[in-house]
Image 1 (cartoon, rainbow over the protein chains, first blue to last red):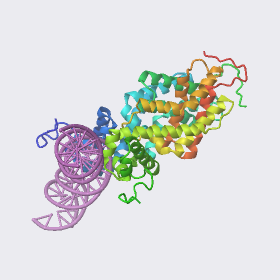
Image 2 (image 1 turned 60 degrees about the vertical axis):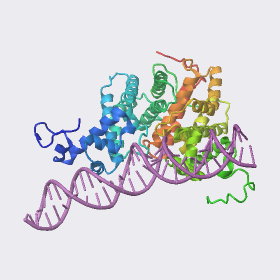
Image 3 (image 1 turned 135 degrees about the horizontal axis):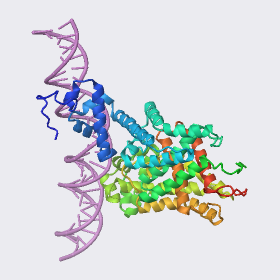
Image 4 (image 1 turned 180 degrees about the vertical axis):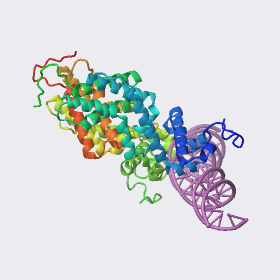
Length: 226
Length: 226
DNA sequence: AATTTATCAGAAACACTGTTACCAAACAAT
DNA sequence: ATTGTTTGGTAACAGTGTTTCTGATAAATT
């Protein structure tokens, strides 16, 4: 499957094999490597993403990966950003509701779906699949933009005075994110039984958090803090 | 520090070196290995717990570890149980309050302290430090007994009718545990900034969860579910 | 008690991993 | 055309989990 005839038709197709792209700038090459790593990640899981396997899939030496990404962590960072895009897409496709609470419930469910559909990406990004991988500033920015929908909804809800004043936007995002993350990660670690059971816990946690962050304002129940 | 004179005085001290214990039953030997691995875990972190390093600390071959624990995962399981004991101790030493809500707040804070004090254990048990380590039945039982205090408090609160009827005991435990776990794990993954910031988020999440799980009954505010 | 048998542990090797040093080939520039 | 420089492939290093082989030691049997 990897024995291409390089010498014959270079220009018949545009930019496919490694040898062809090598003649182009390194940026395309980087994308090609990230793509190879990404398919490896999704097809065989995070532990299958090894420098040698990526190089093998690219039909080249491991040296190229190190020339382009310094080390494995550099490649992992690119995959992280790739995952951020996927997560952002999922969030953007989430149906919006007029009710902020319903919005958060929808986004929360989307986050669960993402963790299941792209579990390898989730493990790479948030699960600590690569032992010593801490997101750098660019990665953190990527996370922020991926969760832009979340920020918007929460920020709007705050402007409407729907969220108790003790919480600022960042706090709400963190509480929301961390709580849901905890259920997913604990499930993936084998601590919450089967999928159905874990998803049930997830939904309960989601509704609980949303219910607390956006308390019901339909009744004049005074918020007591004694 | 590891050059003992074996041939001379075997009975002067009781059960210290590997050679001495080898003559005893294998159970003591297992404990000795687990202890060596445990100190390695606490002193140098989870990634330092390697079969070779443990064997080196025991001054023996790696074969013994495999004879006693089948594979590395088997040793990890024992460390997991060890961590459960530590967690159980921390929970037992937690000051008890008459108010169930305060009890949960205390236990929650203890869980945070545990994750900070025994971070290596935490990563091993819940953080997925060893890539393909899923807790077996014994480990899950260990977790349950470690969280016995939690179960007791929640169960009692339920008997007093302080917890909304939609939640059974296991659900409450899971929601509580997962939410707090999420904050800790996200922090350890470098997603929540520095310790102070993370601890603040932790406390907010904790009080939010407890407040929702044990809604204030001091005022006759009807629980509306529309 | 002597000899056979079975068990056990240590050294070394295997198959991996991330990473680097070396070196030849291809490209660029004078 | 001859330098100089970049570049990428091979092979190696250091480390991992795990297994195989072999010698020594303990146990069992005559």
